[in-house]
Image 1 (cartoon, helix red, strand yellow):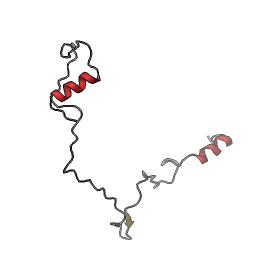
Image 2: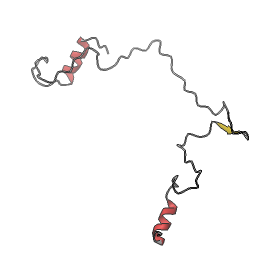
Image 3: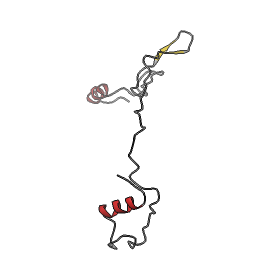
Image 4: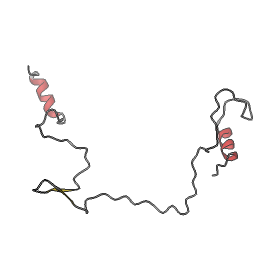
Length: 103
């Protein structure tokens, strides 16, 4: 059973999948080669092609996590807020500063 000629043309324009290619076809994930295969079945890494990520200097890094670790999740009532209603943004920031958060 074969697809219709119109569908065959549409299939040819789509990206090749591993099921449509030869038995040893490997599509990869667009990362690129880091080296080359040797004739003995090994792999030689070309260190000029290896990606390196440089972490910035964080010695004077003053930011903290936005959520304080000591804030408890309370879903039963809104009595812990000053207004007695659901916590709005200003109330959340006040509670966060109170529990050790700093801006």
